[in-house]
Image 1: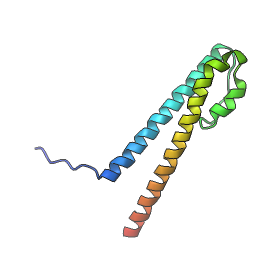
Image 2: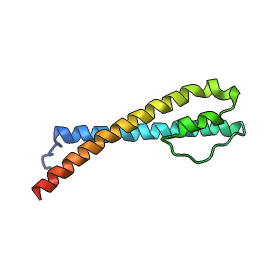
Image 3: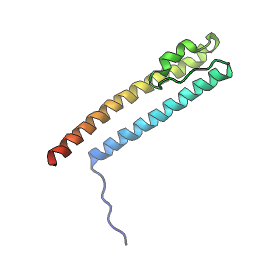
Image 4: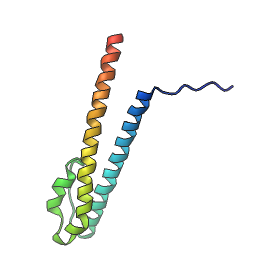
Length: 107
């Protein structure tokens, strides 16, 4: 009834780890953006829908002076998280292009 399991290749597990890391970073970015939006909303300063990749740069001008010190660490973190997501996007794109060229060569 029990069959032996077959583990993925090491390179496939590395690729999967990158995808999971990217997913976690995107969830973190979403939570940080929602926090900023919530704080601004409580001060009657609403921000419209903007791309999450550029939110940290755009929203900085929308923050009231009294909240700048409170939200600066979150905006700094958003910048860093965005850079890390972009880096993983490139790595995942290269890996996907490599696997596509290998599969088309075997077809």
